[in-house]
Length: 298
Image (cartoon, rainbow, N blue to C red; front, side, top):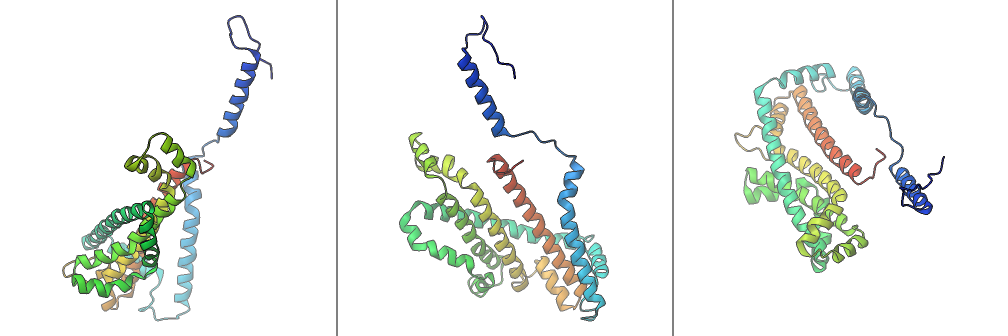
């Protein structure tokens, strides 16, 4: 590679030019080689085919069990019957009204859990005596089966929306709080010292340093909190049937009472699909955050 020679119009010395070349080389090494972006269709297919393969394997195993006549077909219908009934079900307005009600409960309960969990997590991580008092209690609450709370919720709130919300919040908030506490605990001490040098104190320190640094762990806590809240909600809709509120759980219970196995399995598939879609949203947020922090190869 030819060496750049200083000219009369160039005030830099040879050592300056060599240093600039070394810095440019280090920058290129840090950035890494540019990768050619594949076509959108190819990337979508690489992401989708493992999921499609898993669906095919599950459906094939299901059909084999039906062919083996382990249970009568009116108890365990085959995939063709279930998917046919599911196709008919999703064209009705009542079905979408039930989905809307269930998702409204889920979003409301999860939002309350995030609010409460964030406040509790920030307070516990900030004050050592508070952590010593309730730190283990938060973990204990996180491991409690949500169904254990329903008798108390019914005693406190009767058969009402509040009873369901109570269980959803108390099931999800500890996971959110623990996610935030873990994220704050692993913020590098060097960053905290730099923030102190820059004059960050009080709320500004949390707002501009600690909370952004704890986001990866916090998002994991949010994802786990959503899983707890979704399971709690489904259990609540099956156990606490509010009059006039025809949610997914209520409709599934009605199908069970009428021994309509195909509809029961259809609603199970609906709940599974909703859970997978929400999980994909959390994964997208997590991947975007990792790319922003330079934690992925892309």
